[in-house]
Image 1 (tube, helix red, strand yellow):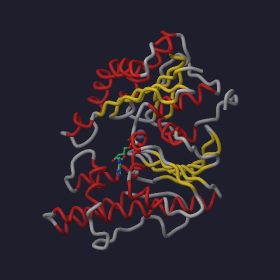
Image 2 (spheres, rainbow, N blue to C red; image 1 turned 180 degrees about the horizontal axis):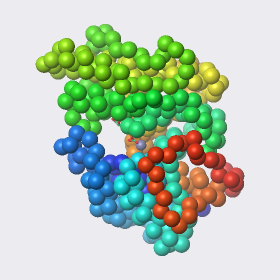
Image 3 (tube, rainbow, N blue to C red; image 1 turned 180 degrees about the vertical axis):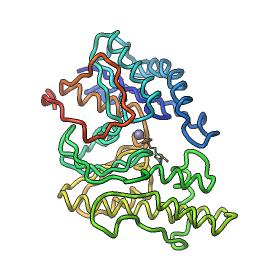
Image 4 (cartoon, rainbow, N blue to C red; image 1 turned 120 degrees about the horizontal axis):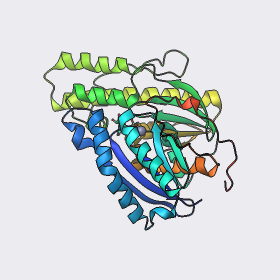
Length: 343
Ligand code: KG4
Ligand code: ZN
C-alpha cells in the first residue's frame, strides 16, 4: 500500500492530506470557510459547496507538492461521503471518485464520524481495542463502544442538540460571533465559576443519553434577566455553561467506562479541542484518555486519509458510483471482511 489521498468537504473546511504507511502523514492542507460564513452567523450550504469546488483542485495540487509526489504515486483516494451537507459532500466525493477512476486506483467512501473516531489512532501511543469513544462535534454527541475497526455500538447520544451546537447557539445568544464554540470557551477562561449554576441534564437518571437544548434555554433566561450584558456577565455565563457541558460529559463518560469495563477513552470531534473538557476527563481514574492533536480534532483531510487507508488496507473499496449521504448512522458501518495484511 502506498500513498493515500484524503479529501474532506462535509461542512465548512476543505481539507486534503496524504498518508503513507511508512512515512506517516506527508501532507495536510486545509482551507477554512470561517470568513465566508461569518457574516451570516452560520454555515450557508450553497456557499460552502461553491467554495469547496473553487478551492479543492488547488488544495490537491498543494498537498501533492508538499508530499513531493505526483498523482501516479497515489495508491488510493479516500473522500468523505457523509454525514454532512449534501452539496458540500458531493464536491469532494465527485472529485475523489473521478480522480481514482482516472488513475485506475481504489477509492473509499469514508464516514466522517468514523474518521473523527479513528483520528486518535494516528498518534504515537494509539489506544488498544476495546475503547469507549466520546464523539463531540457540531452535529453529533455520542458515546460509542469500539471493539474493532467498523465494530461500533452506540451506548448513548444526544436526544436534541449536539454539544458543539449548544456551544455555538449559546455563543450566538451572547453575540460572540461565529464560530461560537471556541469563542465561548475563550470567554469562559476568565469567568467566575461560582456566580451561576446551570443544570446537568439527564445525569439524575440512569442511561447514557444526553440533552443539551435545555442548557441553551437556561442561558437565554439568564441573559434576559441581566440584559444589557457586561463583558464580565458574558464571561460568567460562558463559564457556567461550559462547566455544565463538561461536567455532564464527564459523568456520562465515567458511567460508560464503568458499564463496559473499557480501560481507554478516546475523545474526538471539534469539542474535543475544548481545554476544560480535556482537563476534566484527565481526572477519570483507572483509564487512559486519548485525543488527537488540536489540528486533528476539528475537520481535516488527514483523518479521512487515515480512515480510508485502514479500510483500503483491509481490502475494502467503494464502487464507481458517487454515493453521498447527508444522514448516515455510524452503527450502520461494518468491519471490513478481510483482516489487514500488514496490521
Ligand atoms: O468536528 P467539527 O470541526 O465539525 C463537525 O463535524 O461538526 O466540530 C465543530 C464544532 C463546532 O460546534 C465548534 O463550535 C466546536 O466544534 N468547537 C468547540 C471548540 N472548538 C471547536 N467547542 C467548544 N470548545 C472549543 N474549544
Ligand atoms: Zn467533523
